[in-house]
Amino acid sequence: MIRRVWKEDFRIIGYYTGLVTIGVGLLMLIPMVTSLVFREWASALDFAISVALTLLVGYVLAFVSRTKSTPGLTHAMVIAAGSWLVAMVLSGVPYVLSGHVKSFLDACFDTMSGYTTTGLFLLQDLDHISQGLNMWRHLLTYVGGQGIVVLALTFLIGSTGGAFKIMVGEGKEEKLEPNVRHIAVLIWRISLIYLGVGTVALGLIAMANGIKPYLAFFHGVYIFMSAWSTGGFAPYSQNMLYYHSSAMDIASMVFFILGSFNFALHYAVWTGNRREILRNVEIVSFTITVLTTFSLVCLALMQRGVYPNAVELFRRGFFQLISGHTTTGQSNIYARTFVREWGPLGMLATTIAMAIGASAASTGGGFKGLRMGIIVKGIATDIRKLLSPERAVVTGHYHHLHDNTLTDSVVKGAAVIVVLYVLIYVVGAVVGMAYGYPMVDAFFESVSAGSNTGLSCGVTQASMPTLMKIVYMLEMWMGRLEFLSVFTLFGFIATSFRSMRVRKAAV
Amino acid sequence: MDERTRTKRITSLRRGLLGMLTEVVFTCGLIGVAFLISWLFFVGR
Image (tube, rainbow over all chains, first blue to last red; front, side):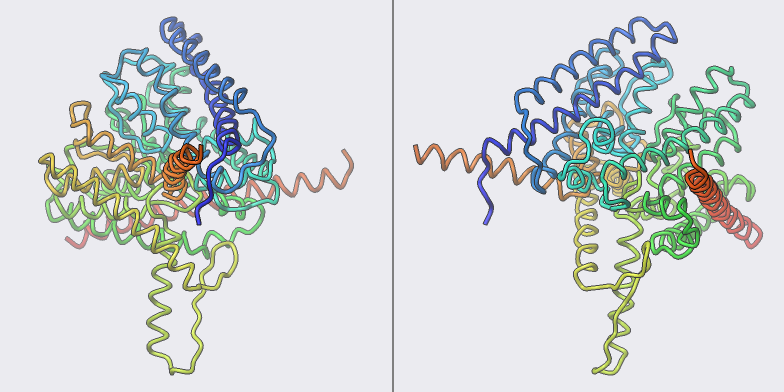
């Protein structure tokens, strides 16, 4: 039986959503300072207005609904899903004030794409936006990768009993430490250490390519944030093609592969369990699917004679494929090259890679290597059961941090989530086809949005139908939060209306 | 800071650095294997 919704439920949700909103407002100070450093006064003013508005909304929400109650699982799920929506709307304000978007919906599309680390964008004249707005875009994706709630947990919420539940709602369900604040700090420590290393490496490469030192530093920061969070944004519209640099491509590739690993795996390897990287079911599954789909891409590109030598085949083919598989979306070819040169087999292999995606509890999307591994192991165990004598007890195992027994409920749980992902991929593709896009293009773009990848074959543009924009935004949101918290939010809204009706009838 | 805490911190730092190196080496190995596959496809065309 579903319980009724009371005033206190709204208070808990409002209070914690308010705290997350305050976190978003404080985050906007970074692009504001960037604009001031670059003497972009108009952009700095845009951010000042946005900071004031976001903090006001956050403080009002937290003040009006202040409570000392701890969130339960339902609250946590609603807070996680709702916070992302509030953050999406308020983060779009600087976009609208900059005048680089055609509508507020386009601004929301871009912020949703940023927070969910997708990388699709509708921003106009990207090559001439302010450094402040560029910093904001990349910061959104960096923070979105770690989880907005993880950010708020670190600085604002603290170690309340319900904090871990909110984190689960955001898809970060690995319990690395007993204290939830320690988990958030750990996630940030790993990300910030890599941020330092990545900025230096990518900045030096940018400098070697002839970019001025101070700008090279910002390019290093932007590309690192985009790569590590498997986001896919870049400061220029040509994305990675702008740099024409193999070193930049390879360095970025290293960081987005690392970013696609489970935070629990990073933690295990960083605390001395180095063999885990070779034994973990997610990494084994990831390696097998990457090499298989890349072989398909090679086959397609060799058949069509697209690239003149092995180096070029690797540089373009593998970069695109691994960018898709890790759900990054950085690109070193033009969007329409997929359709014109790669052909259906190349696009299909990339689509499969995007659909599978990265690791669970990572910055990546897709239905994740862990679920893929569990389902394959589940099928193998069932076949072994059929081949064994009837009285034999056959149990499957998989290694993820430690040896786990493969129960029917684990396999069922993984299968349900995979089916839901496939469902949103199909719905997005059907809407695309209804608007007249070819089937391969529609599937490619829909899977890219639903798996939070961001590779585009040219469908995503400011001129595309409004319904498609909304469907892609929903795909990004659901795909990122892995359904449960979104469905709980819908259920909570429906239950709230029902409770109101029951109370009115009682009166 | 006493000797025990110092040793603990150094061990933790060393483990962290070795862990990071392990991850980077694994990633470079994967990229290397992918290069080998593209080279094999090109040679075997």
